[in-house]
Image (cartoon, rainbow, N blue to C red; front, side):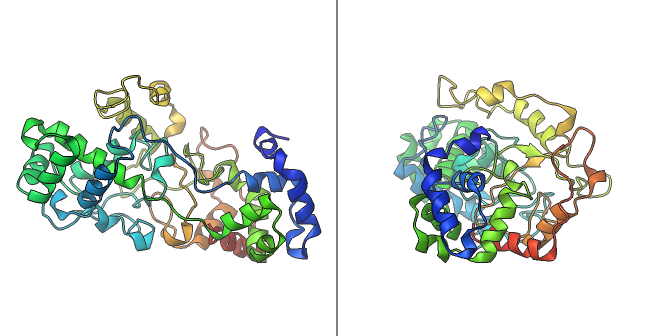
Length: 379
């Protein structure tokens, strides 16, 4: 039995007896499967403030960050804001295949739920902290199209933003250079984004009922979702990458998706992300980290660039998956059924020699596919 499975051993005896002694719909899980199910919680996960961001967890910074997030003044043409592409009704995504700000980008807009739990940010992990990731769309000519100098000038000429900056950071904008002002804005944005946390789902209630030996709660979870969950932790091996309470390992894998967003243009994925991360002055090893000890910079310090990083993209959380279509780094899968079909008949020829060794076609039946989708919709 693996370490992950034994981690929940204290809960297993009673929970397994309850599952096997309950209605027919709950008899499908064995002891190991119960352990894996329990390992996907509890939810929500408790977090501490981000030591790299002195604004993390501070109510005034969170409130100011929300104002910034919703302000069109952060875009060069004042026609869009962060909230334009990160809409709450769409899981803090935008519902289109590839994001569109000033121009179209090459990747799907990632949802913002539960970002505080990430180690790496962006599909390629080019940022190792949330405030650095918040800088990226501000400076990208295709997204908000700003420069540090224009951003500072825009803040100065916008009274509520200038006043909010002074109140949160304890000094007027005029006392800070443009780059420092931009980083401070990003840290307020990050403080707000940390508060975007998904609520308890139908799966969470089932998982908690299982842990508490609550037969009524177990029986309330739909049978198709139970069968899909069994596939998820069993035959499908989905939780080898989508594990833990946030349903992701937070790392990068090649899953056989094309990485040519347009003829003659390649998306390097994690390979490009690591190169950018190493060169960025905004990483956790750089001068803008508020944690003088650099306690959270270990992964950045030791990250290595290898040929296998080509075509790798970050494993997304599956929470609120039903809200965040379309899917994959390029938004090429319109529905959860399309995603399941991809893994069922994964194109092995696209898995380069240095790529994943675990992924092979699952050859799921139509009924199995439907059950797996039913489970994903409960997250």
